[in-house]
Image (tube, rainbow over all chains, first blue to last red; front, side, top):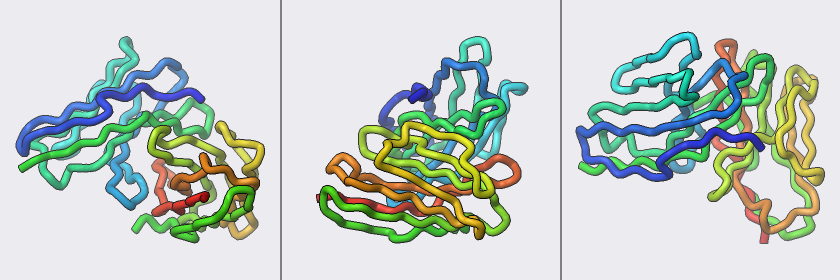
Length: 112
Length: 111
């Protein structure tokens, strides 16, 4: 099944640092790129999302950067906190389809 | 609380058996998505229903089937279970903005 390539698989960051997670896609027929956050024992929850007509979207400490020509988008978490420790998934939704395809996930650990 | 309800939360069964997982979407949402999450496979899209009709299919095995009922709840049926079917199964409903709201999942263990 088509997947979004996500990296790194795991990430350890000191409190206050910047966490960066990258995703690359192959098919350009997508028009919605969300990031989901999942805590252990819980279902994924939407964190932030972007459409390809903008290059960046910021919500609080979370920023999505979108590079259409490189077919890449990334999540930046500024001033990372221990409470941000979770698994993060990028995803993409196809144009005129209802398939939301997820990346393989990044396990983030933020140490105090 | 996402508003999406999944039952059962945990299920332990034996190989060769059949189980049914149930999902109630958020009030007002017509779409239901099913995903399988295992340790080495991430979130795998299985199937999507909209207002009772199948709209998209992922790599759902022939042993698996789903349906969405007139009251919009959905059931995922897994039959002839194998050890490799052990996973978390998530249901999600889709809001008007396109966001998926996930339930807390059903953890299936096949022994």
